[in-house]
Amino acid sequence: MSDVYIVGIGIHPFGRTDGVSGIDQGVFAVRQALSDAGIEWPDVQFAYGASDAAGNPDTMVDRLGLTGVQFINVRNGCAAGGSALFSAQTAIKSGECDIGLAVGFDKHPRGAFNAKPSEYNLPEWYGDAGYMVTTQFFANKIMRYMQMHDISRETLGRVAEKAFRNGSKAPHAWRRQPVPIDEIMEAPMVSDPYSKYMFCSPAEGGVALVLASEKKARELGKPMVRLKAATMRTRPPGSFEVFAPSVDVERGGSATNIASRDAFEIAGIGPGDIDVAQLQDTEAGAELMHMAENGFCADGDQEEWLAEGWSEIGGKLPVNTDGGCLACGEPIGASGLRQVYENVVQLRGEGGERQVPDNPRTAYSHVYGAPGVSAVTILER
Amino acid sequence: MRPIAEGLFTQENPPRLIGGRDRETGRIVFPCPENDRFEPVPLKRDGTLWSYTIQRFRPKSPPYAGPEAFKPFPVAYVELPGETIVEARLANVDFDSIEIGMPLEFVPVPLDPDEPNGIVIPGFQPTEKMA
Image 1: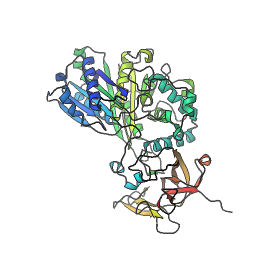
Image 2: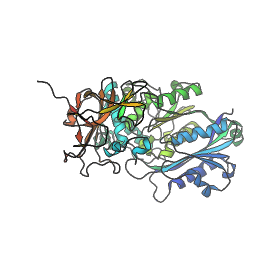
Image 3: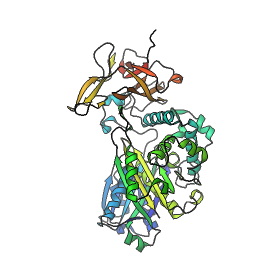
Image 4: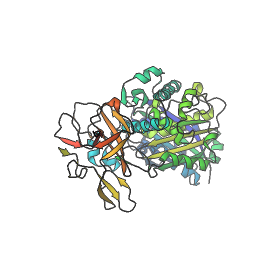
């Protein structure tokens, strides 16, 4: 069993890039990652590619070179990128391969995601009635959480304000203008309690990561960023998920709970050992709830965390240092890999204006998606 | 009044929702899945508000089959004690007076508020206080 290292990273800026296809944004990211690793495309032994709505990733070989490389497509909802990364690391861990690629990209139309009931094993009437709308779930989840754990709407506003402030310092972010908290709070409601600034939007972008065995990583001479754990989990009984016509009275945990627990166990460290975290923040409340679901704080403590600035870049646990989904938007196939990209930037100390101080050594990433999937990674320098 | 789908409401007047009970575990879900593992059971008429939001923009069509003219509507989860928590519309309530925990009773709600005799979907309204 070999340890796995991330030796090359590349990103196509997130947001809207008219005239550039999703797959070309993926190719852009791959070329950047290869260059960063100091290798050429023919050196790549395998690739896992994630895309939800922008075509089959393996077709990018006609742009990159027909080397006959093994290239496997991954489609796994919002966990697609995380699933590609998980699969890629197993190829190296097993000793089967020395160097390979995880790539994710997407390009979604404007507006909410186009979800069909049949894709989620739901009856047609559920869509007819107007329930195939992800924002309804997220709003219902936080509304209950705020009531149970005394979280104020102001705290939701603080999360969004932080996201845009951090995004303004990240060259790959989409929303690069800070937004004052009053404007966030008073903006038109999309789905109560969330205003339009408290939800992320479907977007475009591409990310590529080059993974290598320890031997290969030492040969390449890149900073040694080790992938200590990568987990992908589906939901346990009693969870509350996107597109749920009913929820069990007997409440249970979440896919995030088990993906997180298992990742920490594999890495042999705990939440208190993490120096920087990227947590799924498709809406402001998600960041708050995921802080607790991933074990970084107790339910209800988020009110104090945000008021005290503990999740700011200079705080005790910086969260979403590039502005997360709120500032970067969500191209599904690329989103989870963006988090890992950002973590590698932070661990290498290359974050510029958004660099977490005091040489962070450990970094955590987490995605969540319909219908109850979650993927977590833990990196260590 | 025409239910949006078969098998959602009982035939009684007033109707109740039909859930599905897992024959092995007793777990109740809504709607009743179309397989042998679940048997249809009428659900309680009364429950409490578990959570809610207000849908402020018109959902995309397809799949949404509601009217073109859009009015914001509440989407809620209602806890039917000991059974399940169902997703449904709230009706006959001011948005400002919606509170988690409030008592609710089942009522079919028109998909198009301007066509009360058209298609109906599952909904709940504040329980009428007994005199």
